[in-house]
Amino acid sequence: MPLSFDLTEEQKALVETARGFTRDRIIPVAAKCDHDSKFPEDVYRAAWELGLVGPIVPEAYGGVGACELDHTLIVEEMAYGCSGIQTSITANSLAATPVILAGNDEQKKKYLGMLTSEPVFAAYATTEPAAGSDVAGMQTRVTKHGDDYVLDGQKCFITNASWARWYVIFATVDPAKKHRGIMGFIVDRDTPGLSIGKKEDKMGQRASDTATIILEDVKVPKKNLLADEGHGFKLAMQTFDRTRPDIGAMAVGVMRRALDECTRYALERKTFGVPIAQHQAIQFMLADMAMKIEATKLLVQKAAWMLDEGAPSSIVSAYAKAFGADSAMQVTTDAVQIFGGNGYMRDYPVEKLMRDAKILQIYEGTSQIQRIVIARNVMASSG
Ligand SMILES: Cc1cc2nc3c(=O)[nH]c(=O)nc-3n(C[C@H](O)[C@H](O)[C@H](O)COP(=O)(O)OP(=O)(O)OC[C@H]3O[C@@H](n4cnc5c(N)ncnc54)[C@H](O)[C@@H]3O)c2cc1C
Image 1 (tube, rainbow, N blue to C red):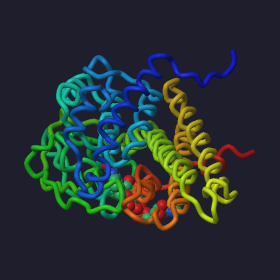
Image 2: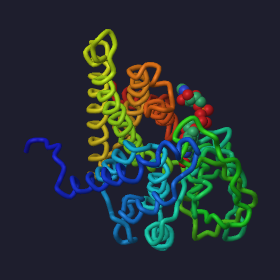
Image 3: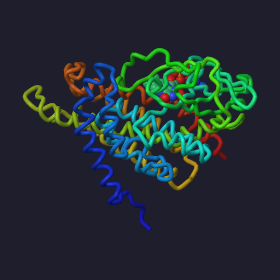
């Protein structure tokens, strides 16, 4: 049977819905939300009503039950409008993923059900001030108290930390045990001892909330245990395998927007008596943009397809994330170049794309960490 890249009729309709929503609700508010560093709650509610928030939640728990490919289609469309607003929306899928993977029925009913019965946020927290790339180096401690657990420590740079109704939080029984000591929990926002610290003032994706979670003697009941000692690290990594293609999809959305803006501008802006689109140097940048969009999209689709088929996807997920993020950085930097001095000004949309793109190379595993994953695999499969 020939390989097919065709979308089904349902998927085409899904793209139309997400595209229309992006055009009507995200694009009109994106620049102001970026400027004010403010997340638009009304846009979130509207996205939720359309089933665009956390669509991966299975139907059994009130969700849409979208496959990973469908999810990447939604992410790509919303990132075209504003990857900051989209990141906050997609963070619900990031938090839902470990619950879908490892939660029991009671946990799924309660916490996934919360996301599907009202427009609330959830967040996912591994990063700490002294442990980002080195997830196994986390210091947040978990101690057992009778049947319950107590968490102490700090999680930083957490998307939607200020807004979330519940969190997936990873902690260690003993930092010396590294990945073998990590456990995972679902923690309610109103648990005594949990507070929200500094809200970050960011370079890009400024509409998205990013803040610190402070954990002081936070008692978590046993029923909220998601991953026992020795299983938490694996769950965190399995989660990233499933969510890294989404970063690739974001990159595609951001790059498509950059190419559209640049093509329009290059056909209008004249230098030396001709539109700059007639200069080969500009054409080559547009051509490179188009190639990077296509190549990233193919990697995203392959990773999503592998996930949907239940095939091991870590490596292709890492390809999609690293290649997409690095491409988006290059494409948006070139977009500013094509706009010349105007590109450097906030009056034009491309400087925001460049600021927004940078984080794609950092969160959910930096581009260097993706290369470590890929290189390990290359070496392991040699000879
Ligand atoms: C806007 C934003 C949103 C975020 N959202 C979340 C969230 O929702 N949940 C969450 O848990 N975290 C989140 N993060 C945290 C993010 O995942 C981390 O910042 C990221 O993993 C990098 O960790 P770090 O900042 O500690 O950098 P470090 O780990 O200190 O890395 C610093 C530099 O060293 C490089 N480096 C590190 N180790 C190696 C190595 N072995 N080999 C080569 N190079 C190396 C890195 O690539 C990087 O360039 C977010 C961060 C930001 C900025």
